[in-house]
Amino acid sequence: MERYHDPFELDEHSYKESSELSVFETNIRFVGGLLALYALTGDKMYKEKVVKIADKLLPAFNTPSGIPNSMVNVRTGGSRNWGWASGGCSILAEFGSFHLEFVYLSEITGNPVYREKVNKIREVLNQLEKPDGLYPNYLNPKTGRWGQQHVAIGALGDSFYEYLIKSYVQSGNKDELAKKMYFDAVQAMEKKMLQKSKSGMVYLAEYKSGRLEHKMDHLGCFCGGMFALGAEHSEDKAKYMKLGADIAHTCHESYDRSATKLGPEAFRFDGQTEAKSIRQNEKYYILRPEVLETHFYMWRFTKEQKYRDWAWEAVNALNKHCKVDGGFTGIRDVYQEHGSQDDVQQSFFLAETLKYLYLTFSEDTVIPLNKWVFNTEAHPFPIQGANTVKEIES
Ligand code: DMJ
Image (tube, rainbow, N blue to C red; front, side):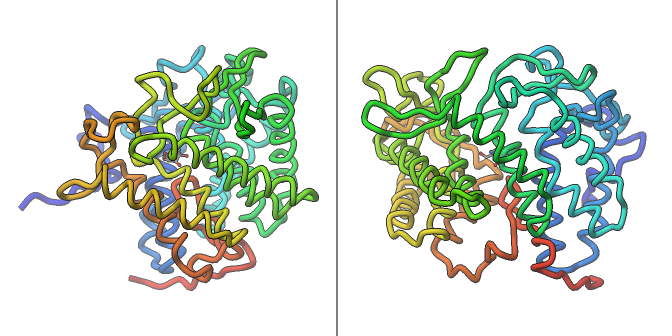
């Protein structure tokens, strides 16, 4: 029988070919997943495993600025950025999404190294001059300077904003700098990017070198839930709850305006077009969670039946268009009732999409939001001071 090979038990003879990992994806999926398992079970074994993985990522943080590179070679410790990223830059959503995991790692291991890495990223971002208060999606780890001036709540920006407010929540409302950076960033986006369509739909457009592109990614639809979570900590709770509800409505429209009742990868507001995709390469749905994530938060915070109804519509659509033998698949065009399928079940379907659906139809006592905070892959971490984990030997 073939021995199970733990990919993180590497020696110089293993994995000569494919030893490069995305530092961000490994963190949010593997480090985050194991940390949540540790938190939920108290089993020490998960802590030992997660440290091994996290330590393989650390060399990526050895850059002149402390902003990590996107990829690390777990065999050699070398790291580099994606070839497609503007001018050798690191990506905001990637290097801005380590805080929750690394703070918790330091807390449970007593090793400060992880916290030091994310505090350094925080310090760099806080000190940098932001154009109009906005955070561009690209930052050069060698020079510590911004790259291309592209700002987005969707792809390349998304979870950076999410981790600011969630770091504040995770700290038991103590991390005031995270809260300030979150509300400053959100207010800048409200000023420059928040739009209302002809029919009154609210959305966050993209900002490219001072010009707006009237498009919202499916990925950006998580922000309805984020605004609702942030509202709890704002002096203007009503405003941010309304913003969360408005985004939930817009993102639901992007589902409702398709033949499958599933939403496209990106939708636009352009002339007659409202909340629909007009480009063929933006019409696919790959089982993403963000719209359902927002419905989950809106349900927990408002108890308005429509959020459960919208979630249930998606359950029916998933069963009708994505269910196949052995699992679920993405579809290539949400506007075609009988279009083709991509034959891929992304790991976030189980980690996030089904989890947020399950929680939308559960009691609030299942992972209560005053005790737990979800990382960007929906792995729950304890809120400091509200939740204690009793460690056990497996
Ligand atoms: C997930 O991997 C995470 O939520 C990430 O932050 C971006 N979105 C994907 C799923 O769509």
